[in-house]
Image 1 (tube, rainbow, N blue to C red):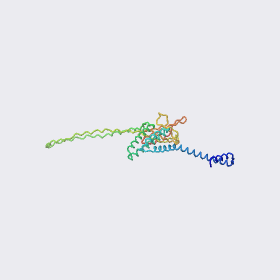
Image 2 (image 1 turned 60 degrees about the vertical axis):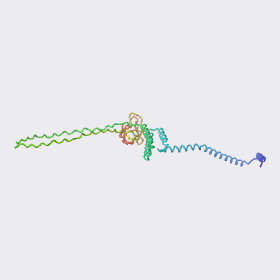
Image 3 (image 1 turned 180 degrees about the vertical axis):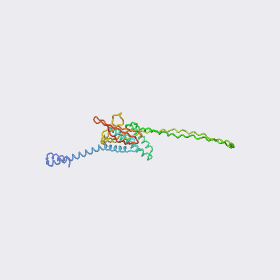
Image 4 (image 1 turned 90 degrees about the vertical axis):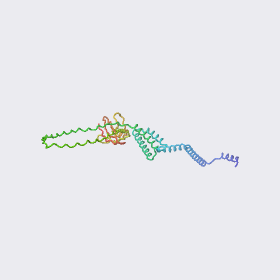
Length: 305
């Protein structure tokens, strides 16, 4: 079929009228085909444009997972430490911040101990340095418990028993000398003994007293329960370390329990102050305990007016 004949046929179709039903059917098929093709082209185009973005997201996700799971002997451990230290600012509550820092300190101590057990001294020393920096951060963030001197009861003086008088011996009569029949024969004098040479004692060197190292401050968590005057759980009670500050370091829960982390030394006596204002009535309580480790179980407190 040449071009002239095709042109003639198309010109003839211009004057032909198609059936309306067939016309609608063909139009619907064309519209559906066009819509399907457009949708497919649009989805493929979007996928092609999103492919680099999705690849970058997958790369960063994999890199982030590898970084956050990096051990102390990995080159990514420094990045992990920097990310974990930066996450401290995301914890607004002092309690959440203290718990997060304590969890970091415990995690880095465990990592350093694991590296020391496996014989990786260089990586262990680096993790120990990071651990010491974390400990200083914990001590600077946590409130410092003031040292409290607890007065010990002084024993009452015991009266000493009066001395019993000893009986006085009566004087015995002096014996009467009896005259001897003859004077005693003098005995020969023994030769003088040779003096024994004794060496002078050598003075011993005085031992230099070794100074006792003072205990360092550690993170101490005090745990206890506060009760009302009728022995019901006291909720919403303000917990402080000193009366000089009116800021509550934490408050008791609905069951009266509390958990306060502060910086203190082993052997130090920490004292907690509890207050709650009910209208015009101020309820108060006090508890103290000697620090023997990182966790201190405080005695139960009963609020009083």
